[in-house]
Amino acid sequence: MDRTPPSSAQRSGAIHRFRSELRSWRTRQGLTQRALAERVRFSRETVAAVESGRRYGSHEFAVRCDEVLGTGGCLAALWPQVAAEQLAADGRRGPRFGTVAGLDPAPAPPPARRDARDPEAVVAAIDELRELIGQVLGGQPEADLPPHPSGGRPGRS
Image (cartoon, rainbow, N blue to C red; front, side, top):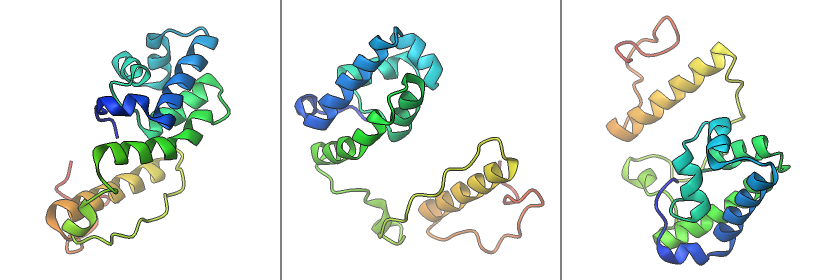
């Protein structure tokens, strides 16, 4: 969701509010765009583009900014409306790959947030991503391959 918005998106309600809130919270904290970018682990160009309306951010961007700026979840709370406005501006109703790749088009509930410091959680997340990529690219999961001793798939890097 980090695409360039059309010019009409700059006047959208939630998108405009998101941009305004981000800039307001950043300046209240006395941070430059570069300082915020370093703390949220995104580029300064991304922060500048989101604030100016040249790009959409992402949900992860909103969550990280909330954490760094101490907004109490203000930006993440706006995100569902921002995403809906982005989809409307793009002329889409949602992701299209589900029916093309033969995946279940019903949205799955979001997974529980994992602790990135837990090696088992990291391995599990990598395995899930590999399976998803396999489904999207090949149409089927790699069920015929034996599990790798580390929990992953053999022959993958």
